[in-house]
Image 1 (cartoon, rainbow, N blue to C red):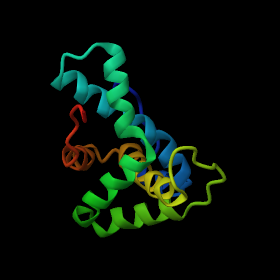
Image 2 (image 1 turned 180 degrees about the vertical axis):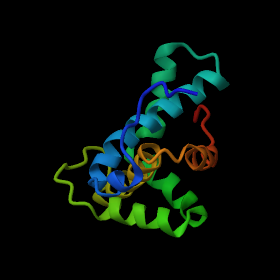
Image 3 (image 1 turned 45 degrees about the vertical axis):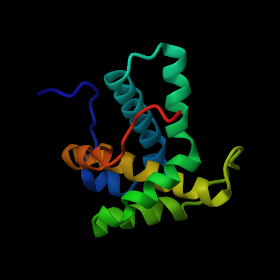
Length: 136
């Protein structure tokens, strides 16, 4: 099956990218996953979908998700998380602590790395560990 969005880089090229590049795309992939899950599981109107999605894509929630799934990650994935957490990011978080922001960047790095390196089955496994539902 042809990809909807073409990923041209090979794994060795992805390994050489900055963890912040992984986080950049990981942020998008995770937000799309959350939005799709909410659409699949609810009949909410668009504004309410947006309100619910925001609850998952904020730094604090992503840091919590990473803590929950970390023990289930492979050694290689834990190394990717460490690289993402330790990357030098000059962005100051608005609504999160510096630590929460570092861990959310680490989470997004993992998601982005798996996506860019075309590890789709493993990405699905990890995302399936995250229960997405309205949090009210």
